[in-house]
Length: 251
Image (cartoon, rainbow, N blue to C red; front, top):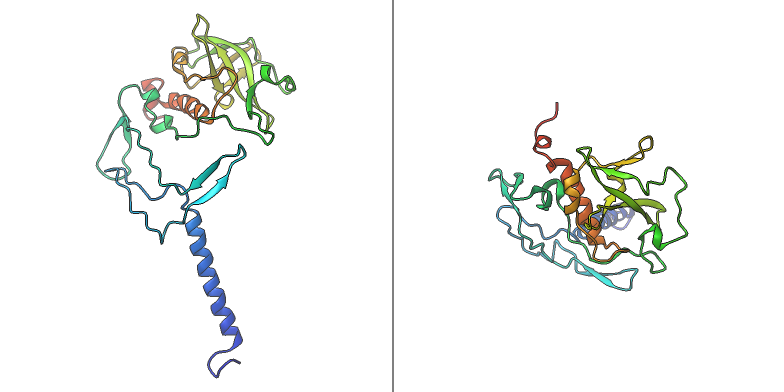
């Protein structure tokens, strides 16, 4: 008993309430390190950076020796290549121009750093097998030399190499030579199907004619995080926009 009205149990309970309130407040600050302050979509107005509701910037040390601060209050200033289908907040956008490269909807991508992902020893995480002889294809067929078919069942090119993830030890991409001097393109492994019987690689999301517009690499044997983002977004966008029939309802 502390006083005639307050005992130790009450003090412990009050202390717990104060601690729990502080914990919730701290957690709410930490989950606002990215994506805040909020930006409305119509118009693109940014809310005020209220320091009571937002945490102070924290510096994160990156594996490559760099640093990243969050929150940094940087905005995505890219133009939105689409028109709103309504006036209410959150209304969907209809792409204008080439929907496959509109960077909205199914094909939207985030701005990421234009450098390759690294593993702990500083080497690139995702590389073609020709750049790392330690890797070989053991689990499943080796698709190198197989023909790549688009969603229209037309040939788009030939698989020339397989890109592997050194950290996760899995296949990330197959490299396709389009022939005719058009160069090579990467296809994300989850977006293709290996047909062992016919020895072809089937890519449903885009057609053969679309492969020429797949984003390219600035360096032959390296893929940056930004390039991975835009390449994957192109195939994801094709899943919806490759042909008009895909935009309608499916029964």
